[in-house]
Image (cartoon, rainbow, N blue to C red):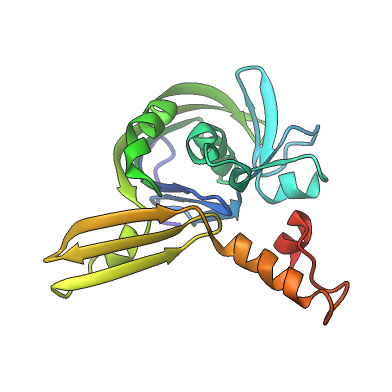
Length: 220
């Protein structure tokens, strides 16, 4: 962690509300990378615990440990947008407490056609309790970028380039010419489907060691 002033409020940040895991990088802090799980089970003030708008929930590893009753981003194609504010607050609840966060945010998304919807969900000022302590959170979305684009940052690109991003719930195909993106196509099949296929094919070879249940996939 860099030397951050105690009264600092404004932080550049990047956020990926992935189907399998969410990633939040706030300037000056370590990356938060946790499973995209949300539980409304009653828990203590663990990392990822949030109270907001009269609702209490937990995001990440602690939600997984709460038992079988948790929601996963990958359970619905709408969750990357619908759950974005929920998981963003949950990610902040993994960081050292601050009384105020003003995030200047760049967000990645598999389908840039949903950028306006995602921006509307995230933008605003919120009063929340993060891991047991009150915090004022302001979110200002600066830009929504296609997933996979971050791998090109700072790189000298060839005249023609194809990028394939294998995610938990989607596979993304992007084509660039002269550094400009010409094609960006999300396919609704990702690594979880691959794991499930492997599990099914291995049942007769390795019974009991690899299963296709949602929980076993995460644990293996």
